[in-house]
Image 1 (cartoon, helix red, strand yellow):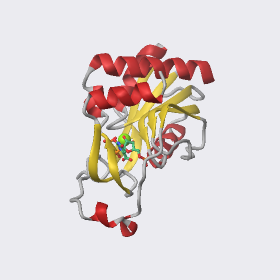
Image 2 (cartoon, rainbow, N blue to C red):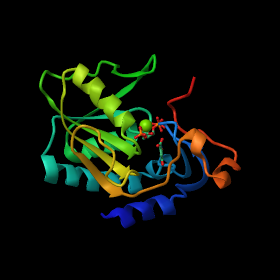
Image 3 (cartoon, rainbow, N blue to C red):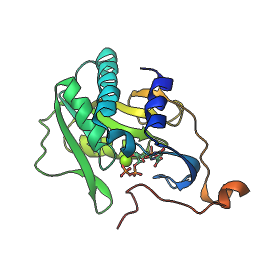
Image 4 (cartoon, rainbow, N blue to C red):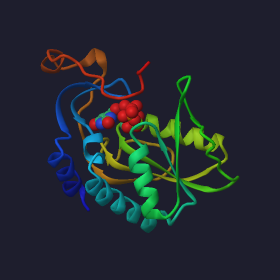
Length: 193
Ligand SMILES: O=P(O)(O)OC[C@H]1O[C@H](OP(=O)(O)OP(=O)(O)O)[C@H](O)[C@@H]1O
Ligand SMILES: O=C(O)c1cc(=O)[nH]c(=O)[nH]1
Ligand SMILES: [Mg+2]
């Protein structure tokens, strides 16, 4: 599956949104990939995650566990783990920082692939990897459905992306006037209270 095939799954799901969005990183963008509309369709989610699992195995082999950052990473993390034939855990925010909770346990030295939905700056991936290491896991790679940085994001381990694209994103005080004129939406969970 190449980038065009992946974006076609997003387009057909109505998940390629245009407007004014504040992203998890605080950057602003005229484009948002509403991945949940894709993952809500099990057949599409299966196609994407099966392809991602195959790419992971081809590049780094099969890990012991797949671990994702909540909320967006949970569904693709589970489905990718199913195709890898490994357990699926997730980290979630406790007082702002990602933690492994709910009885999920990593044996010392177990190998982990961190599975994200979307990578923009790589901040959430780095936070997730830090939480996995704090719990004793050895992160051999990160993986995602779409890398919006076009390969520029550095998550500290190899990043295996099913699709790669470059989408404009701006700091809050450097918005182009046409973007500033549109009311802003904050669709993610980082700032939810
Ligand atoms: O690479 P980054 O700059 O960190 O951006 C990508 C992150 O943003 C989204 O999560 P978000 O925190 O918006 O919440 P969600 O997982 O609930 O969608 C997405 O799921 C990634 O985790
Ligand atoms: O950077 C983000 O927060 C982000 C971008 C995007 O296109 N989709 C998403 O769910 N999150
Ligand atoms: Mg997320």
